Image 1: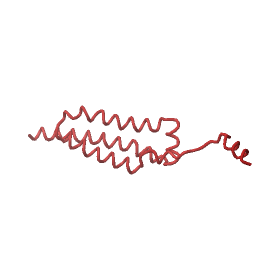
Image 2 (image 1 turned 90 degrees about the horizontal axis):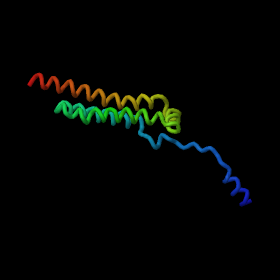
Image 3 (image 1 turned 60 degrees about the horizontal axis):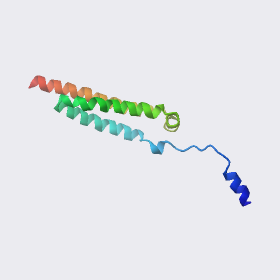
Image 4 (image 1 turned 120 degrees about the vertical axis):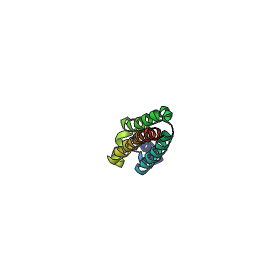
Length: 115
């Protein structure tokens, strides 16, 4: 009996692990995007030279969103578990950071114009 159990344990089986517990939640993505948007807006209102740091940050957010979904073993599993709203949350957080950069630059231009 022990030999049969041992031999059955050697049979390869497909195992599906949950991917969602290893990736950020949708609410976590939105909160991260909002906080980063606010910080970037305030910093860029203060100095336009901080665009040197803000541009790569925006690219990093978009790259993270693309890379997460482009991986053949992670992307489809996340979409299957979380749904298509996860795609919206991933790219939405990146868009929020981009909006923060735009608003911060506009506020900086208004500040410089009024000074």
